[in-house]
Image (cartoon, rainbow, N blue to C red):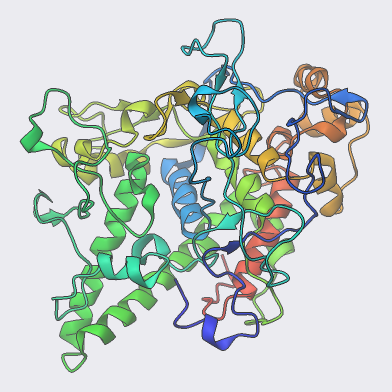
Length: 514
């Protein structure tokens, strides 16, 4: 939330603030110039070809194992992404013009932008399309500080800064609900109904019954509700719930320690000082330990360079292309299995490992099945999945992604592509030019980057021309840079974003030597 330290003392108080527009590094591309995403109008051609419809298709779930990193690297990426970006969808579930339910129409009508399903019968859904809700437009453009009268821009509803908003929330009202205000030690609230062998769980949401899944056959009186935390996505997948819980425990541990060291401090001072420490730890882990492993040390040094201190002319707002494409590279490195290990880091004898789909919105598994430790050991003890261009996403994210307020299972790859078009992101080639790379003109140019002629043929048969390739897919196709886990384009975009987050943050922790 950072605002106490930050927003009142800078020239551009809206930069990086919650509920402002994502930054545009290139102008948006809409079919009508202002609002309609690519693919909205049937028959529209680009570079002489129609764009392929975003459709839900099955991709193999074969993965290569990372011999140096564990699943914790992948899950920290998702966790820290939730600290710096969240683009809300339209609050309306019906078309604005005729009131049609977006769940039951295959027509493009704001805010509905449905995704087509293949006609080969390979997916479990027998519908001709799956629902997609457009992102809410922003009311304020962070670059001009005015209401956008022209091109549609999307909102970041959380602060852009690495400030542990996942722990403390992005608003004063939310923060207040997370605190134990009766505590003299500046503590955060914890669960009053269940504990993890004497260690606290996150508190449950106040509105009950909640939408989270329940243990099969459990009684209504034994419900395990959704957890609540600084970020509303805490229940999406068990590793996220685990990381959120660890940080609440760490806040309370540090607060109790500071109370003993400084008995003259009041609860508010203890809380704020603890919060500063937790925020600094988020920055250090991300900038020192995480980002250099994603970009590679050489590229990290090239794009970020030594820290020269706060620069009030740098806009730290998260960019649209970073939030919608580049930092979503991690979706292709998610393992199809969630490992639960015993104290010897072997398969747990009582709580078997889970298919990924079994960990969606299932806090009951932490409460009823061994607590955090088996999952945490799995994150630390099993090798991470490496990106493989031939096999871009686990089947559970292709067919079984669960969204609580939508009765169908969805396809994360299709959602990412459709979201990029919804946001008006320019194509892969335009972003290569933005980063100073040569544009891809021929199939052989693309094959040199990808390293697989067969894959290039598939992509070009779909898109017709390199200019038409969606940036998320194009970035994933590139072979990783030396020592990193992303190709040249995503390495550039992530590097530029991390530099703005570091240099444009008045409260940045200096981490010069990763």
